Length: 219
Ligand SMILES: [Zn+2]
Image 1: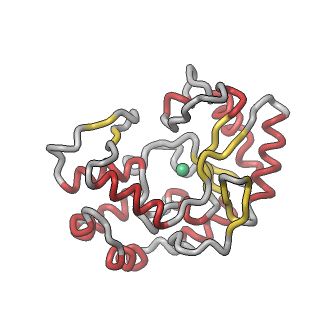
Image 2: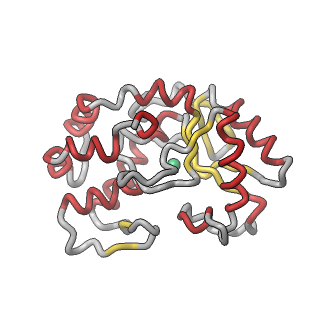
């Protein structure tokens, strides 16, 4: 359940999205309240499985999907050391088994009323900044998300995961999952996963754990 390999803790928010069964009601309350301010709060990504995260990781680690810099712009894959590739991936993508999206407590939020129906959602920081379409949502979340139990674990850049103004975590439940993210847990995942750059990950595991995996809300 913690590593995204089972789905029995989930319920459907809609046809395209699943969340932890106990997160649906608080999310719906928050959504209703946002709607009163003209915000159509929607979820771009809720639960993500281990297999999906593994596919994302391996596509990035093998250069099939672009690595992004702090502004969300592509960086050249060639010329980076294995460790630099890992750091670049982990700015934006979690290690399979360690994504908060596996828990169903975390989601990526956007405002469907702020863009046209054919808008291609990018989930980059500019969309949530003053000139971006989701700035109103970002400000509303700053003020109100906490009263529904939602926090933004990646809101402040501490040099690990990039600031993700769209990423919300239902804290009352997420804290119950966070405690499992120990080095023993991560080592077990690495031993069993067909991960590209797996050896380089194991060699620098302590640093990676501290920078990226140690629960943000406990730092
Ligand atoms: Zn997210």
